Image 1 (cartoon, rainbow, N blue to C red):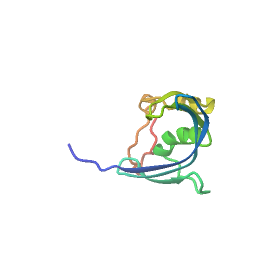
Image 2 (tube, rainbow, N blue to C red):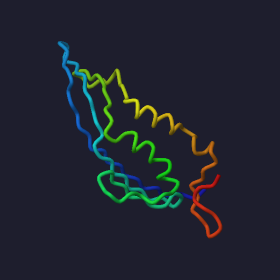
Image 3 (cartoon, rainbow, N blue to C red):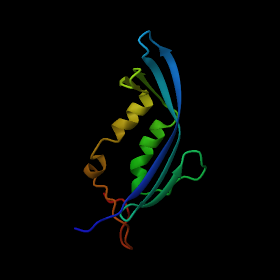
Length: 129
């Protein structure tokens, strides 16, 4: 088989707020995703450059169609968790909006729907159904 090079970088800017600290030193923390930056280059899905703080949005295509529900579900939404003094994380709670976004993006969803990441030819489109 041939090697396919797929480059992707993601940057998440987050705000952390400590809501409370117990006597044992464990803390209830709330994280909020304030900004998401995604850069991708793939021979299968093409190139994409996204910054949630920018007015410019990515061109519609198969990759953005897969990522958009997750990105929009994460932005501005709180994630609560409990963190011990040793860094053990538990009791993770997602917002309702985030949970709904996760449900929409189940593993294999795009394959089940017949969506392909093939490059468009002169006679076809990126999204095949």
